[in-house]
Image (cartoon, rainbow, N blue to C red; front, side):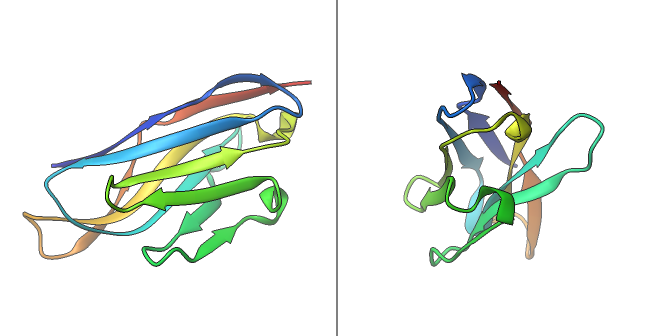
Length: 121
């Protein structure tokens, strides 16, 4: 059993900052890609940022220059530093990771429970 637990969401004014954290725990053999997705009301869930195990990153255009994804492999944790937040960043943010459990021969994609980020204008 492996799981992802997020923290750090909340309410912030436009222009403010928040830092999301997501820790993977359980019977983990290895963690490959980690990332963050978000889903606004009435919209589909979209990728925000990914980070590979070697640190290579990818961002959606709308957050480039404002958000920074990082990871601590020793702690099995991924972070999302969000600066210069805008009302359109309001969404439920989900942690995502491609991991292999010690009990399974293959990698699978796992999701966190989501954390609400609300940016007021």
